Image (tube, rainbow over all chains, first blue to last red):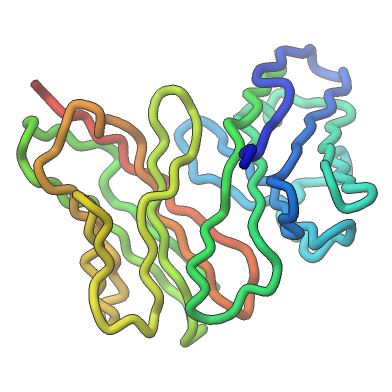
Amino acid sequence: EAGVTQFPSHSVIEKGQTVTLRCDPISGHDNLYWYRRVMGKEIKFLLHFVKESKQDESGMPNNRFLAERTGGTYSTLKVQPAELEDSGVYFCASSHLGLTPGDNSPLHFGNGTRLTVT
Amino acid sequence: AQKITQTQPGMFVQEKEAVTLDCTYDTSDPSYGLFWYKQPSSGEMIFLIYQGSYDQQNATEGRYSLNFQKARKSANLVISASQLGDSAMYFCAMRAYRDDKIIFGKGTRLHILP
């Protein structure tokens, strides 16, 4: 099966510009997550979709970030306007729905989008 | 609050030696899962091993084993007979089942020396 794919792999933009990141999860995975890793720091949770609904967006840093998952398939993460501190690697991950205790379904990660804001 | 702590920012290990990467966690949820991921220089996140909080035995996957000490809230990753290809960042992660997201530690960069 095809894995999680993310586009673009790299993006360099100037402060104040807009960038849109895309994630295509594994087919049939209802859970879709966005994470971000700033250099030298932990991988931080941003938000979680179940199908097209936002289950948890507690990790979104501020209202400059907008995530969508229309139709419950691919997802986009838009940063507008971008700031210097938004630089980092943005990971998307997906997993099956219906997680229960003992379920060892790991998150399947994409290769990430490296965003550099100058 | 849930938390994952990896206290080793970097480690250097001679090839063929065993290596232990430390991970401690904190959660009030009695039901949780612990994961280890490997991130090589190419950037992808590779799932290595899983341990459930109710599992009686330590998880093993090939050269990877998880030293799970529930009372101490530790879930150290042990890599036996290390190889040059093991050089990478390693992340410990946890999912508490009342909270459907996985949280990560800061990672440990492992360098295997020839």
